Image (tube, rainbow, N blue to C red; front, side, top):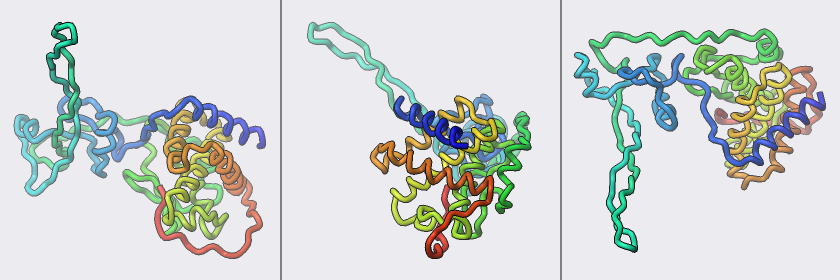
Length: 292
C-alpha cells in the first residue's frame, strides 16, 4: 500500500511542476453536455459551465432560432447568457508610415433558452452514453455503507444529513470519471464527525484555507482510490492535478500542502478499505454546510 500512496503523490507533484492545467468538469446536468439545438455542437469552456442549470434536456437555442423553427419561448421564462469571441479589423500606422491591420478580439453576449423552456419544438434525444458500473470500484465505494443520494448537477458531501450526492453514471464522460468524482466525495465523507472527524470538515465554512486543505485531501484520496481500483489514466491524473492546483492558490501555491493532504488522504483510504479508526482526542461537532 505504501508504494501506491507514494507513486500517486509523486505523479501529482510532477504534474503540478508543469504549471497550471485548466481543470475541466467531467459531468453535465444531463446525459450530454449543454448542446446547441440547431447545430448539435456541445458548448465549450465557460459556456458549458454557465449552462449547468439542472434541466434534463441538454439542448439550448436563442429566442430567434426558436421562432424561426416555429416554436416559442414559454411566458415568464428567463434565458441564460453565453459568450462568444468575435474579432474586428482595425487599421494602424506603424512608425515608418505603413498601414497594418490588426484583429481585435471582443466578447459578444447572447441569451439562450433550454428546450424545456419552449413549446412547439420537437424533442431531441441525445445519444446514450454507454457507461457501466465497475464492480471493483463499486465495492470500494459502498464498502462502509455511506448514504448516497442523487443530485443532477453538483456532486457534494453534505454533513447536514451525512449524505454523498452524485449525478448519474450516464451524465459523466466515462465510468472512470464517475468513480473519480465519487471517490472524491467519499473521501470528504470519511472526515465526518462519526468517522475520522477531520477538522477541515468540521470547520469547512470558517476559512478558505480550511476549505482548500480539505479539497486537497479529497482529491488526493480520489487519486489513491483510482490507482487502487486500476482506474487511473493520464486524463484522470491530469484532471486531479489541475483541480489540486486550483485549490493551492489560496494556500499560495505551496506544494507542502499536497504532502500534508496526502497523509490525511492515506488515513481516509485506510479507513475506507479496513474500517480502521485512528485514535483521536475529544468529539467533533457537526459541520454546518455542504462541501463540493
